[in-house]
Structure formats: C-alpha cells, structure tokens
Amino acid sequence: MSDHKPEKISADDMVEMKCETLEKYIETRHATFELPKKMSFNWFLSWEDSRHSKVSKSTSCVRSGGRLRPRVDYVLERACETRKTIEKLDPAKQTEVDRLRAEKSDLERKLQYLAQDVYDLMLENDEYRTQLGISAAQRRDFNTVRKMAKLNG
Figure 1 (cartoon, rainbow, N blue to C red):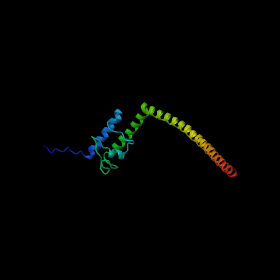
Figure 2: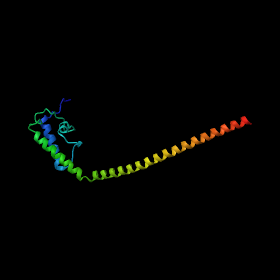
Figure 3: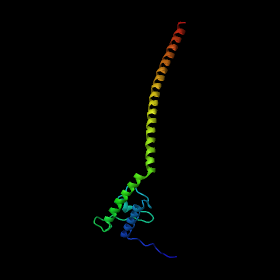
Figure 4: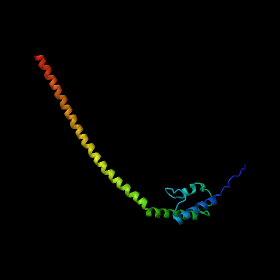
C-alpha cells in the first residue's frame, strides 16, 4: 500500500481556480457549482466544494492591494450581473412569482371570508347564550310556581 497523499493546492492557485470557475459561469451562464443567495467576497473565500476549498482572508493575494484582489472583485461583480440577467430572463422564475402572487391574493380572499364566518358565528353564539339564559330563567320560574302551587294546595 502506498501512503500517497494528494497535493495541497496553494491559496493563490485556489483563488485562481475559483476565478476561472466564475469566469466560465459568466461566459456560459451555466453554474457548475451551487449558487449562493448572495455572491460576496466572504462567500468567495468560504466557497468550498469538491474542487474548491476555503481560502483565508489573511492570504496576501486577496488582501486589499493583493495581487489577485482586483481580479476577484471584477469576477464577483460580473458574476452578480450575470446572475441578475439570468434571473430577469428566466421565465420559470417569473411564472413561479406570478403563481405565488395569485395564490397570495386567493388566500387573502379566503381569509376575509373566514373572518366574516367567525364574526357571524360569534353573533350566533351570543344569541344562543341569550336564549339559553331566557330558557333557564323560564324553567326556574316554572319550578318556583309549581312549588308554590304545591304549598297552597
């Protein structure tokens, strides 16, 4: 058995690999990696998958004024623009947004109907309580009259 360990890629090479991957995304508009919610410098440094590993902020090539920092900033800016363009043109996303808006308005309408039903049921409940109170009072009066009739007679 061989104790062959894979070569560790330098931070500079890793940054360049990440930039090349983003440049390919910009060119083809097809991501070969999982797109984050927001493409930021912090995301770029912490981006980790089967081909890429994390890079420290303290690495000289990505610090402010570093050799690769302008390239990283430029690639991130272009990748964000590309993503926005794709999202604007993506009919599936627009269809989903339209569907969700329609569902929201339908749910708001149902909520109004349900709120009215609850209010009507509360009024009906109050009427039943009033009727129940009147019936109970009538029964007490009837029982009182019956007791008085027995005593008198």
